[in-house]
View 1 (cartoon, rainbow, N blue to C red):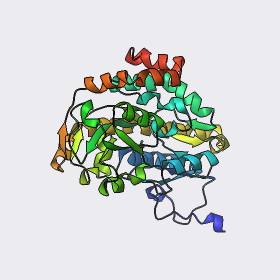
View 2: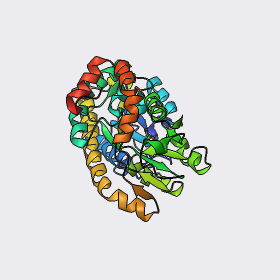
View 3: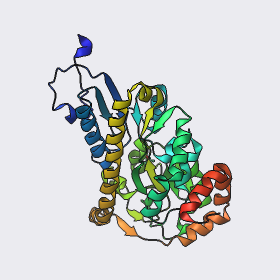
Length: 334
Ligand code: X2X
């Protein structure tokens, strides 16, 4: 009897249950999905739509409960949980999953992509397939369509970043990501790795003075409340891999797998479009909220990274095959 009572945690976004009576038969596959973003971010809005569609198209057999906003712990915790099967789905940024699958950070090489045409050509093409295969070797299933985080920008409470020199010694929070640490050290800054769950408070208490994230995240996580300047450095393009625990994925029969994959990949494509539209309005919104925006040229950052040996080092770490696939889209980097 207990199993037949479908209890929806108050914390989850539960609109997906609306079509069903509150005491419904437990779904055959009841899966948890954790992520690190506020519910207002397009990733959560589209993921909820996907969960609703999956519940409907599987006639209640597959239910996905979403735990947004680090409710289940920070990225490192959720990565451990999706590996062990404690949760079935997670959307780590490429930077974060790279702690487990090093080549996954390749899209985050500094100043590699000049625009979204290049980004999606690479990630929907051979480079993305190469990374998905590497993720698969860790007994995780990566869905085909990567979701957009965005081009990362630099914010600070101290001063605008107008060129590489302004990063000198800057205490900047970066994700738990070896590549981010290497890149900001190469740029002369003093980076510290913190999970996203700690970013707002660490800026508020001045444990760090700066952070870097795409503008839509700065908006929905209200980082403008604890930062004064946003410098549009566009230094990294970052995306989210939608991944599933390998055993949980394999438990699904093929017809259900097809429904889940289609819903998640379609939602990912819509989420990309949401971010594209947000990118058009977010600068004005953040300015209205008091952030001072500037647009530094990329040259001084690139030159500093070359001098510091950043590209040579990461080409070596990623290996010629992956590096070659990236360069097929973006041209020669190192
Ligand atoms: O932690 C971050 O900065 C974030 C939200 O962009 C990632 O998920 C890497």
